[in-house]
Amino acid sequence: MTVTRAACEQLDARDPLAFARERFIVPDGVIYLDGNSLGCLPRTTAPRLAQLATKEWGEDLITSWNKNDWIGMPGRVGARIAPLVGADADEVIVADSTSVNLFKLAAGALRLNAPRRVILTERRNFPTDLYVLQGLAEFAGAELRTVAREELAGALDKDVALLALTHADFKTGEIHDMRALNAAAHKVGALTLWDLSHSAGAMELFLDRDNTDLAVGCGYKYLNGGPGAPAYLYVARRHQQDLRQPLSGWMGHAAPFDFSETYRPADGMLRHLCGTQAVLSMAALEEGVKTFDGVDMSTVRAKSRALGDLFLDLVESRCGDFGFAIACPRDSQRRGSQVSLCHREGYAIMQALIAGGVIGDFRAPDFIRFGFAPLYNRHVDVWDAVDRLATIMRDSVWREARFQGRQSVT
Image (cartoon, rainbow, N blue to C red):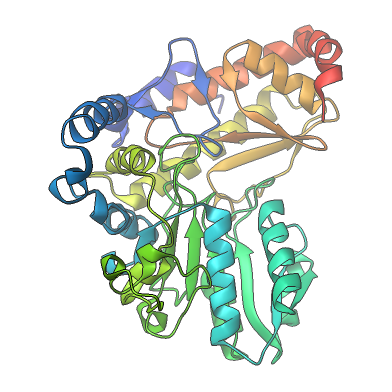
């Protein structure tokens, strides 16, 4: 059956998440399908930052650390993120960046699981994660072992201290079976560390249920915390007493305002703090996470899958003769909240789409990605995006974009 724009409008009229779109500023004339890189601006963020700057900072000054609970922000915002990833409130804290948190937890896992010295990951893991793990291995005298995705379970042995993976592949959107890989790692005595940056906020996660050990994630994608938003980290309660991270800064001290000359780690998740938190950025993240108030993550996941399936159905029916290859799992159970297409002119096609108000992104060598944020993306947005794509291909609009953009391809 042919899908029409009117049918998509009817789906949006029945969407149980339709109310959430009003929580965001979505520019007129823009179809924003890049939530897997940067979420839209929540309506409450700018007023919150203005209030923090003018009143809390401008008038209350340093008293705001207690009066306005700046000091409690890492735990407070972490507790809001916890239900989005299937954790308890005392298992998540906001701090630093994803890369820094990955280093902290991976280093802590090596220490906890000594004398094992092998970190296992997949060869096509997110590049920054690979870089961090390479640096840690060199610094700590460990071995970073990389294998193909399908070889991970077989590569787990008694030498592996840590299995470190990104849950959703950044190019293809393919997701790992977290529960199965956790079980396989634990069977040989290894710990697990998951990067949730391309998953949290767009799909259900069950860190506790799936017996995950450690996890990190960013705040600026589906959590809508703004560019460069702080990240978060998760440590299962069973590890919190024994796990030590190497960046022993004052905010992770058991008594930071005693100014002792000797470090003593705080209890629970507070020990994973390091320096003073970035209050303005953390306030923006708090507003981003509030956009999930009253939202059921199973509904988010159902809509995410439906939007991705609709996009692929429309591409197959309307753009099947234009040389696209589907580069993500067709089965939505195996796919995160993005779809990926490959085309030899992918860069130019994406530039033409962006010029026409459809914002996705490009990843070398030939991937064009569309990330669906179920809180604000609609079915009609998908229809209009593919309609624009079909027009671009039919009229060869991408050829001009290819010529104009060639010098900026990196």
